[in-house]
Image (cartoon, rainbow, N blue to C red; front, side, top):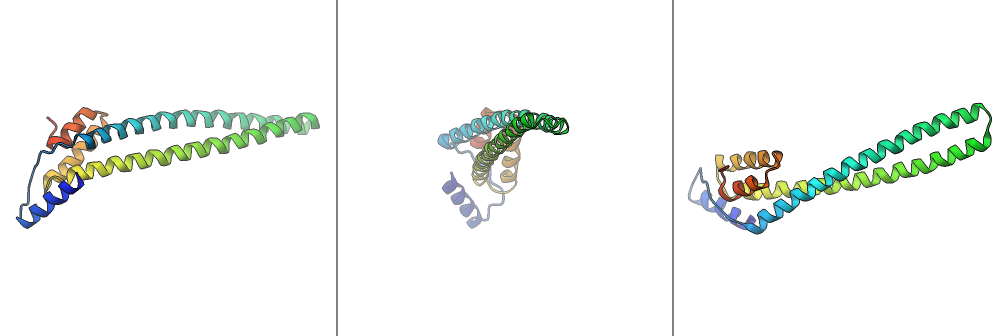
Length: 160
């Protein structure tokens, strides 16, 4: 698709064509976009689960801090030691969950960058306002979570 887009743009520039709408069928590229969008959806679901886990552990940390303060005021060193041990475990768990969330975020961003690259490749198959139009249509289709419409837009440059 990238080579075809370069060819279309170079040819349009050589022939001084200001506007050009095209139809192009790249089933492998469209399939890749669909799989990338499905992958991004999975990353979003995982991100929600990770956020819930982090909130749960953070709540446990808050409770442990209150218990530690109570144990300190009551001078119950045995309980204080147990609570601080739990607090240390929770802290380690928070760090691990944050690392998972960060890795998930990086994978999601890389996936979305690749989708954006595919949209730009599809846009490069057109010249002029059709090029800008396809980017907007593709993004609207992604926002609506309509992969069939996205495939149609990439192929024909139109919604229908």
